[in-house]
Length: 360
Ligand code: TRP
Image (cartoon, rainbow, N blue to C red; front, side, top):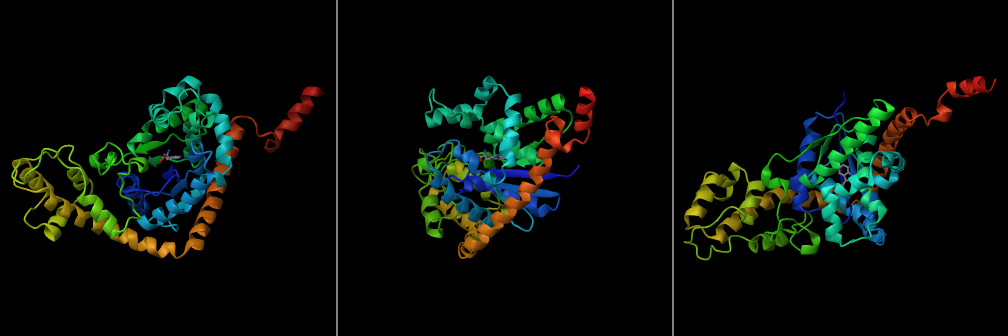
């Protein structure tokens, strides 16, 4: 069986380093591993509209932001198909058929949906489209026969629901759809990178994000004012590493070779942590180190962004060509789905003859 990746992001804002360590970086590695037959990366504008339907311009503007972030991170349009969800209408059609396979109660049980309903304060007035977006996500995944979906931990319930839909479809209509596997980040710190203020999640509304498009100076300022251990007041004080954002970020970004380069007094992150715990290591020193580590990772991304920002028509052309290719692939699957569901009336040569016999 071919190995196919599908993943994507909602175009509701610039992507931040939480997206990067949680998913983007991995995608680039997977893309360059040569192990996959096909890689689709989708800008999920239709899904973003399910809770931004009253602000379509926000989605429109952020399509190119997300595309720029992808290209800057090293997603290569020669190797990966980058496309826009709404440009593939087959996805919507699949969603309508899959809706029959999911109960309303099941939609309400999805933990990610539950917490999003709470966060957005929908109360009793949840748009039906929003409640159903996990179904549309199952369409995104199955339309491309994706075997592997590299995403963050918050997407686990979506994958679970997609697998249920696949199984139900295949049971009722016959083996047609491919069951996808989730691929989570293997580094625990990358599963959910906290905001610079130590809050559990990086989010635009909390103002605690470091963006991929941030300048060197922006990043430095954000790192230097990061939340650490509030009880570590004097350098001599013993400090806590757990829940200390600076160390969580180091867990996500730092490699042993960074010590030789930027902080040769230590050989590894374990040594640095041990010193911090004992006391005698100041926050500023650790933050400066983190800043060097992060700048090294982010500098090439920033450089590539500069190139693409000067070539916007080329970016749109990549999206257009990607969308055309994705549409063709999804149309193939939809054809199979409709045949399995016996709603392929004009493709079924036997239908007219069988019907004729019935009325003879
Ligand atoms: N829900 C994802 C997010 O919020 C975006 C998305 C839409 C997606 N469709 C998908 C991710 C299919 C993986 C597979 O980031």
